[in-house]
Image 1 (cartoon, rainbow, N blue to C red):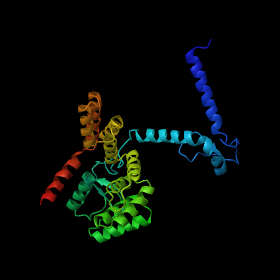
Image 2: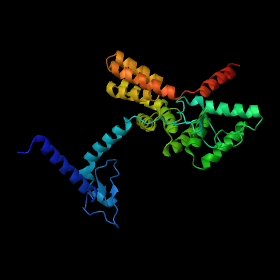
Image 3: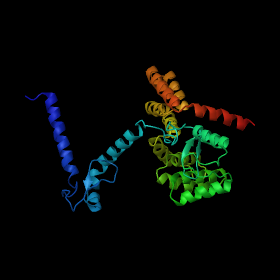
Image 4: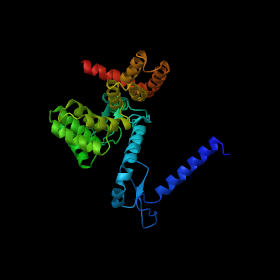
Length: 316
């Protein structure tokens, strides 16, 4: 007799072989992929079937719809709950340290759309001032502009080049001016190009109903897109939503992921979950260690100096 483990191994191998056969043949008509026939993955978001044409996919829709929807949801959930390698901001292009997740501690350059940490930006300006040099962008070396209108022209120029960062910034400007309709248009275009910051501000807009009608589904969609891209605040908001719906285990996972990126609010929520018995002491200890590692990685002497100087300027 075949042992249970051997039988399971045999069945698994047979299932994998069957899946491999399906993936090289149209799931509807059975035609194999050859040089002049290219199969396309099912457009429902699953990774289970391939088809030779839209007609074949439509013909197989009724049989495949339920398993497709279930598999697509599983893949989406797996993607959503995977720890990103870094925050949505990535590294400073000058010092190559992780950018602070607080965008106010970095400067967005209208000449090249690069986000530069205040440490590098301040160090560059200080060096140029002391040497009597013209003030230039620390990354692309374009001369800096001080007039707000000139800066806006640079952003508009980059919008015409289909730059999603520029679209996000222009949307932010319009939003501050109270032109919410135009802001939403800019952010929607940027989000369509994959900009995590645009996804996040759209999620907030759909939650608050500012500039658009309140829409829970769109709030969730844009929050998830931003979170997948590494936006800790968007991730935190999803965690709060899960908490409010008593899905504490999912809330814990989201808060831990955000805390691992350096989000202090999420770390505090893990602590509260622990106090309420929805997370273990080990969960909190691990989140605290990972949070501290993330915070330490974002620190530097130059950033500390810049923060002190900027604080003095703001107080004057």
